[in-house]
Image 1 (cartoon, rainbow, N blue to C red):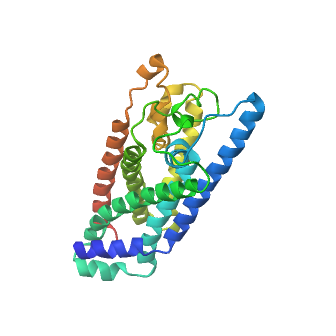
Image 2 (cartoon, rainbow, N blue to C red):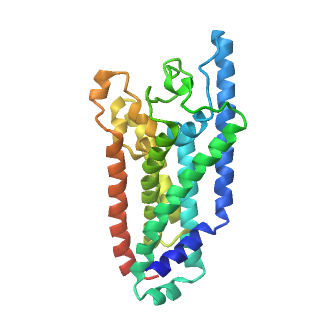
Length: 287
């Protein structure tokens, strides 16, 4: 079991695909900063006043919590990272050798579960650290969140997402963000691996990504008629700031009883469910 875990750690963390992940994180952080500069300039020209001040913490918040497009891109990158490791074992014909060493095909999958979770934590931490490092080159530093995040920028239509007016300190907040996104990414990666066992095609790795895209499309259609229905869609739950969308509207908030803890419990439940499904699948699959 532990020998197989070490093998998975080596396969996943020694992959050169992490360079691609770092490049994606840096590119998205630069894009967020550029978009912020353009929107601030437009706001100043339109209203002849300066928008609320931003600082370095705005970029990782936007990357990991506020912008669904960047979150979706990160999901694609993580699924690709884990799926590539699985496909390398399959394409190189290593499965028979690995199964012979463990005497149990399910052991390969069971030992992969904690490795995927650790990889998810490392992945989100890397995205946070890289985006914060890029922000340090451009934006002013600060020990607390900026007025742009904690002020009324959402009501002024220059911040497209909600944020708590009295958040915890930035390190504590982002520790919570890592704990929020890691189980969600772990579930999606496990789903990708299990589907790849059922359907032995390269495209099977990205079926969870296609499912999220479909979920997002259906979400946009349903919320045209019922605005609070987005709480029942997985794509909405990936965006942490959605939990504070109705915070300033008590009547709507009463109709939206879906706290952050509920999303984390749902993500962890999905991890457990697909771990069991994967265990059964690997015992029965012909690999």
